[in-house]
Length: 74
Image (tube, rainbow, N blue to C red; front, side, top):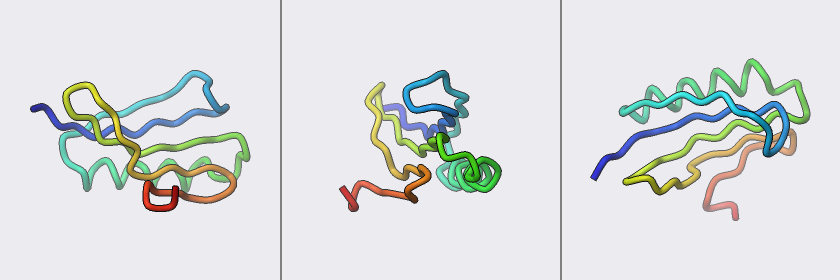
């Protein structure tokens, strides 16, 4: 079982993305927080923190102009 953490940045929903990959959750969370801080002024930006296990992804946190959501919020 391979576990990794991804952070994705999209400047428009469903558009091209910038993505980083880490094996340590704390490092990925730091990058997520950094990208939210840098790009949160743009109302079209979407930033996601995901967990990927064996090719299957699960969103841990998502930031949009409407604020942050987590799986517990949905």
